[in-house]
Image 1 (cartoon, helix red, strand yellow):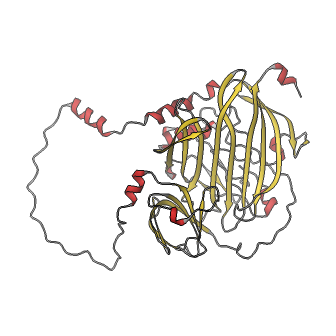
Image 2 (cartoon, helix red, strand yellow; image 1 turned 135 degrees about the horizontal axis):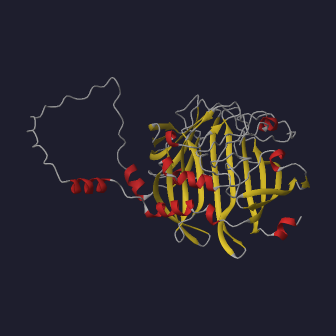
Image 3 (cartoon, one colour; image 1 turned 60 degrees about the horizontal axis):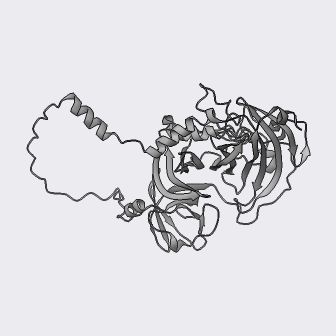
Length: 435
């Protein structure tokens, strides 16, 4: 994540340090497989590329200059996330956990999108749907873009259908009410036996969801179950001049990664298909994998994440349960670092997809929320996809793909790293000597 030379690329951009990682070069912290997640190093620090300390330099690539078009000179962007309460032709009401009830003006040019950037008909949005609203800082009451994060559950739709309760204006005094006679004092409670008190306390404490408990156990045993292996890592680095409407490839770096007893070695490093004697870290932004840190952090009791089951789904042929998670800023171990050296531990929201049969997490979607307007970046997101790979005849669930995105506040400049892991195979003496 700490790449001091993203600014060479576009003059302004630093990308989000995501996925509980040193993104992109240490993405996440430590190497994959484990071996860089020793006791005493938790929580980790996940700075933005361009941050100071421990960063990996990006090669001085000459990027063609491009003047912003009319309409791209936009002010700072504010993002609000919450539950849709009501929607009309000219107004949208959002219930935001961080900001309370927010009313937004809708214009003819307001865009309605899904998470992938596709168009969404506003008439299909219903109360209870989870939305992100983007507005200019100079006009925060006007929605510039409405993004559907996911449809609401039945419970969320039912709750959102209730009238919106807002505090009365400051100059309106509450109506006087007739005083009711004082109630007779309640009798003193009778002390109960200790066993009854204990039983009551246990009854009041919510039991942990068994699916989340199984996922915690599976994540904790992940590192111990990994065999020695070799894998090909492909990282494509991209940049956008138009707020992610389109992407331009900067370069592609590949390497063969051998993991033996939790330690990794890089060989056959190539930049844009050409062999290089440099280590991957010296070629520029670099993702080393170790996504187990992100997984363990989200499921760790230390983050006190709140989980809510929202759907049943499938990933390929495997049935999965989808849980929404949220982590408060005061419990967040995800540290964002800007090029200017600003640090922020943001609140987080996202979804995890848990395999019904194994309890293993198959997919993670993670994003920073309620980023202060004073922070240089206004977007930080991460996606991790897991899949089964055969290593020496053993079928093992491993990271197959990861994607991170970040956008510079007050601009339409964004960057993205896409990493793929291909051809997992068992590490042997023969593979160690093979070029």
